[in-house]
Length: 593
Image 1: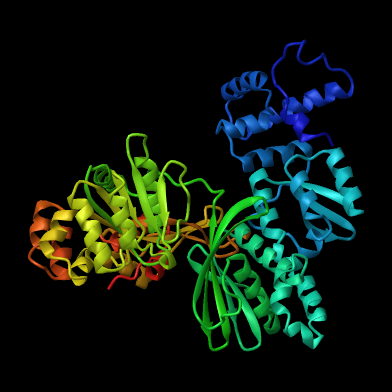
Image 2 (image 1 turned 90 degrees about the horizontal axis):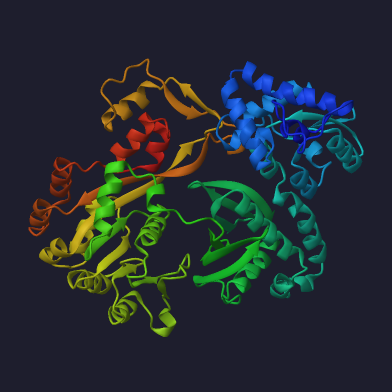
């Protein structure tokens, strides 16, 4: 077997002799095999001969391997390349979406070696270790045999699939049991109960290692929150992934206090106080990635519970165009936030992506000619060229006092992290009325409810109608996994909901919708990542007139519908029709009475 790197570095047409010497012997055989890869791609109708020849010319200039170049150019995808390489080398091709690596096989190869060699052990049978690789070669086979001390059989898989499967197969939490055993051994001495706090601070303590592993796995699983919850006989650890909580780990009950103490020390919280709710924040590196943790504790009947909000600072910030808004919503919202004054409200419950939307908006507005200032609790992401203020109630910095100070700083754009009370609402509205663009979040179920909450706070209707220029309400719902999406026949109840919520009336019982059947990449959930659902209410002259008359919730909804506002449920159903999500996910994530 020769290297796939050699194979894909190949050219199918004659090349400059100064670049590639005239082949002879084994080199000539290799050259023949190089030609065969191109013929396979053309024979499979993955490429035309013309496109292949053009790619070969580009390869001579770029120096890239042919297979990698074809993938980069979008001519073939990685799985097509893997199948062609499998046929070329006479080895099996495997779909890692359908086959999970067995634990005993994974344990034969260290994680570091798997990542550096881009190789994943799949199964061990009769002393032979089957390993998925993207670049098969005799050298790689020998290296894997030396590392595992086993005979190795190579199979080919797509590069991206191997990377994903390595993340899924090598679990950071796999090492937790060893540290738990070490903790329990040390805890046999009764004095350990009195020194649990000091144990939590010891950098070499088992508790510290457990905390590090929990955070590392949370980052790998794209968890937005980590819940550490004491129960009667154990401590439950759960991750919120794509908006849904999943059980991931159970720790001994006696370890709970030490784990929570460790996290509270990191966050600068009082480890002695276990009954009063506390908040803290910590910046740290996990597996080479910078993260911020927002830590919140509260006392329960079973003990102290901790929730960590995980903010991965290494992820690129979303642009406004990347949020998934429909084109007409994106256009109108863009006009609203580029207005020189007025108030734009982003509404939704906790975890609905409001802050992400406003940060994306600030990225669009950020320019040297604008003075942008924010008042937040907490500052989740730091913008180098934006002036951001952190709430500090102990020092007297609240939303109201901070907003007053911002108004003396000659701002053009003001971001208020959240409007919680009448005082903050009045100052924000006054700012919008005096020539500033004010962006803020508000907890409300939909755009209409957010608008009317100002009236509930005691703000005069005519002031609200004058200051607010638009309200956007949003939710996040899970996307169907692209790796395992299949068509299915919806049930009668699903079709009835779909039509009642605004789906096309042409739907029949024979229509087919999309869903994820579950694969290794989505942990068999059928979903991966989330998409935003948006409801935009624009303050037209008619809407301003109606709001000034202190209308009911239904009055505002009726007028908004007449003027083209699509509700959250209607927008979510549109995503079902587009094959982005499922009816069941809409029922779960979009609950509007």
